[in-house]
Amino acid sequence: MFEEPDLPAAWELWVRATFLHHFVADQGQWLWPVMETLHYLGLSLLLGTVGLFDLRVLGMAKAIPPSALHKVIPIGIAGYAVNAMTGVAFFSGFPEQYFYNPSFWWKGTFMALAAINVAVFYLSPSFHEVKALPAGSDAPFRAKLIAGTSLGAWIGVLVCGRLLTFYRPPFFH
Amino acid sequence: MTPIESAFYWLEHTDLSMWVRGPSLLVFPLIVSAHTLGMGFLAGTSAGIDFRILGVAKRVPLPALQKFYPIMWAALTVNFISGTLLLIGYPWKAVTNPVFYVKLSMIALGVYLVVKIRQEVLNQPGLDDNKVKRRAKLLAWASLLAWGSAILAGRLLAYTYTWLEVGVRGGF
Image (cartoon, rainbow over all chains, first blue to last red; front, top):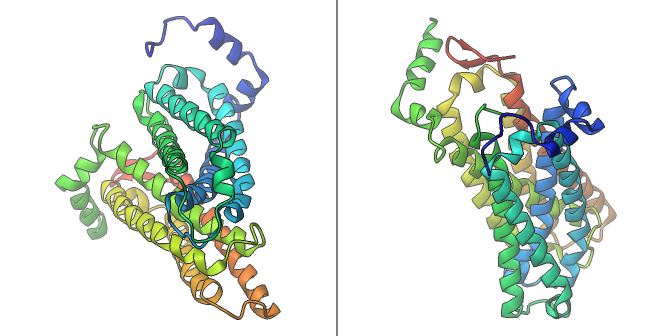
């Protein structure tokens, strides 16, 4: 699965024919670092909003009603959107650097776990239970489980993302 | 070699420095991962507090946000240690790059503002005063700007160096 074939596969030829691929791959040296910087800003926004909400549900800063803190979540979603867009651009620029890289698939696995966890939180009664919590109260155990999974999954996404660079020669920044 | 270059050459050939630069996937990549994780929690938590001061999630009581401070101090500690290790691994690369000093200054400013915001905003009962409010928003904007610049400068370090080690030129 991580073995790159001698001739590019059909999907790779397709990616390499897109406008986005040429935009990223043929740009001068500054587009890539700028996109990386945006990617880092996006992950910070995600950790600083969703992460703080998770920590509140886990029991930190209990004087804050979770429903009040939940208002910062759109900023986290904006950070995620920036990272999804820059992420697609990274992949389009150098698709084989990602596809044949175990770290990329691990990162995807953690992203899928995070996504399922988000769906479970908002679709199960947990969201309403947490939203109804007044200041000073402790969240139910299942909500804490979801919050802990969220923190763990995003940390996993971040670490695997950072390891992408090192996992596969040639050395990429 | 100048005396300064010799000192850095010596540092680059200590066991610790060579260990950091070594080929193991468990050393350099994990130090860098810890550094990125610390960055996210430090800049992110500070930014989250800034957004509250700027008017997002107004029902969050400001004094309660002080409970998130240990997260930032833990993240800063992780990044001080991981950053020091990275500096020991590639000392000449860092000190010969002006962007490195911009990054350090922006982190110092960011940490200063984290402390200042606690003193002047979160730990401040008289926040209804318009003057205090204006000052609080100024501090919050400055904090967002400091962290954004620190992250930009940090990322650019990988693209702006001229020396990899003493006597070994980088690709820029």
